[in-house]
Length: 366
Image 1 (cartoon, rainbow, N blue to C red):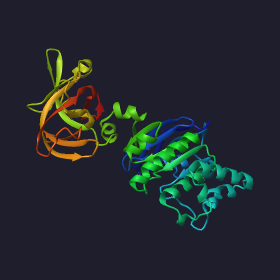
Image 2: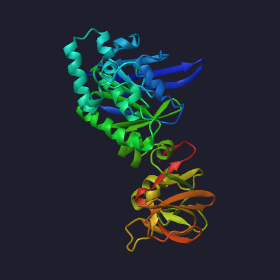
Image 3: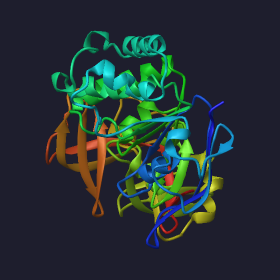
Image 4: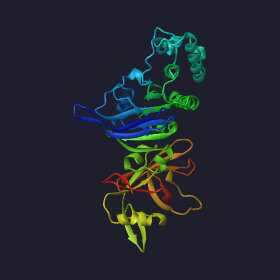
């Protein structure tokens, strides 16, 4: 079993905290992605798991064994870096087999492992080439192959796709997912790209300022964020945050966002939100896809309002529309044939079934 356990993990650089006492349980064969903005502590956490960074406090266990004082080479992990770190004078076969040759693995076993990894990664025909004869995506596959042949307990990926162009990133993302389905090894993957995190992970760990904001399946983070940070970080375009005041009348609640626009709170949320009526610093959270053109038939808890559009962005399959409410810019997603034009008026609906109410003073989703 190769579960990875972090307990009260701390890393401090000259009294500057980089990781602030995080706890995390990674199951055997699970694909976990650490995601967050630059400086959030995700790469530092990965490097501590690898043994490349000394921990300041806490405990790391791999397969049930505490590895705090175990050197990297003895942790039975394999790491794929942002730069592929291939030896330019060696062939692909020699690069992939280098670690095994150092360990004096028999030649027949080396050949079998390299051939198996090459077949999984579809690079069999490249084994005799040198790195300079390979594209960026092919080099990344070789780096992954070098990790796979070692048959480690844990794979660690440190932003492995950030040097690739956008199209190749999408392609390699799919390849990494396929590889994990074939080679069921515990994987910890670091990225700042939330799309990468959502598409690859069994569970996503959102980090911010050295702490873990939320851990969950991609859909859970998207549809049920626990904090404003997670709500705003996951999803593109980002969730809209609209200042509001909760008003109570005849047992019902309305979220007022301007003199002319207020949204009726769905009845099934009334009891939950009622204690916050009249409170300052409240925000409505609505994703752009929950603000769209007025349909022919309204569903329950869809509310129509009219705005003047400032900017429209045709995207082919949809058009993004931008408008302003009381100084807050808001983005919606409408059908490309809905008639959205720069400077024009448009009737939109807010799908309040997907409303989030956020206390801006604490950053918590209520």
